[in-house]
Length: 265
Image (cartoon, rainbow, N blue to C red; front, side):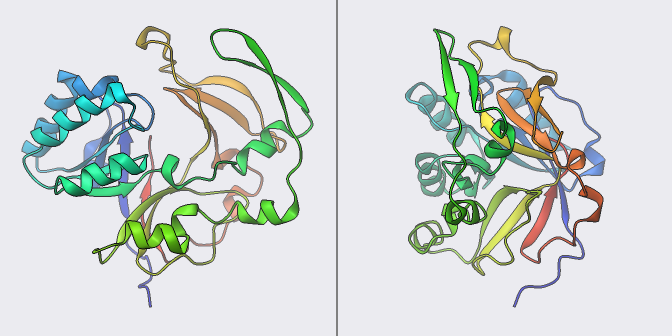
């Protein structure tokens, strides 16, 4: 039986170089779920060092690994002097983190469905929408999913029996990063999983930047959800906000499996 989450850990996810009130948080995760440029950044390593010297608990968030990012990720693992929580967004990064003696946390990209409950609400009423992939335009067509698939949106694939056996092998517990979905959170998840819940930004998709110069460091408006919430794009992430969803202030208490919250990202 899980304990009630009366004292949730407050965590911040920040991009290297961003300034926050560190004293307001129990733990700070530095990095990105999409961008890999920071992996070799001196600013990033200096921040890790400074936060450690101040006694602040820190973790690292890393993007899905590509061949060009692997070398920098290996270098990062070798530079960490003590066991560190690393939010990973693909199975390869999970395994490399585990083997290195650090603590993997399952990131949102790894935990999400291939299809996402936010996408239907974004494209509902817009059967076709232009998509630009930096080379040419394409048309994205939306078809409403069957009810069985819509219900399946609530269940992350990392909670399947097969995935649970892999991720929980030899571990007492595992932490997963998830969003606070306006359509409701799952009533229960496997007992050994704890959730670090993003209270505000709800991931829709990933839009990688062509270069750091083109990166939208401030929120860029992309459109609206069916319910009228604004879709934003910032640092490669496309998202909308829980606070802008109808009835956001009337949601029930968080499920008992939530062990911490993310209040900035």
